[in-house]
Length: 72
Image (tube, rainbow, N blue to C red; front, side, top):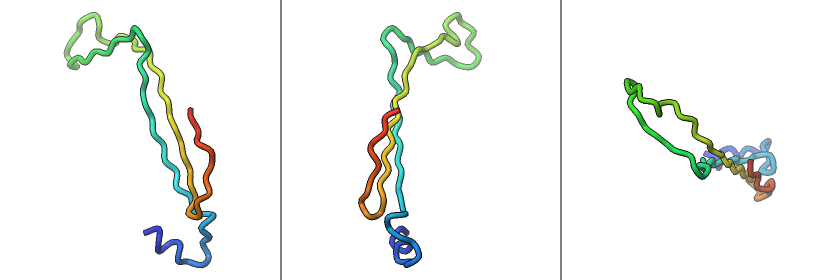
């Protein structure tokens, strides 16, 4: 599909970008993950879990130019 787009002389390769993001959830030490059914009313239901989410973003143009990798 991108090949058809780049064949159009009005569209410059330097103006066509692809962006990709990937996220990873990191659990903090001492956190607990518990899976329970919706009808379960035990004390641990709704326990707060400390977590950190790390997201990386990369952006590359059709003519191989790129933005620096971003880590959020």
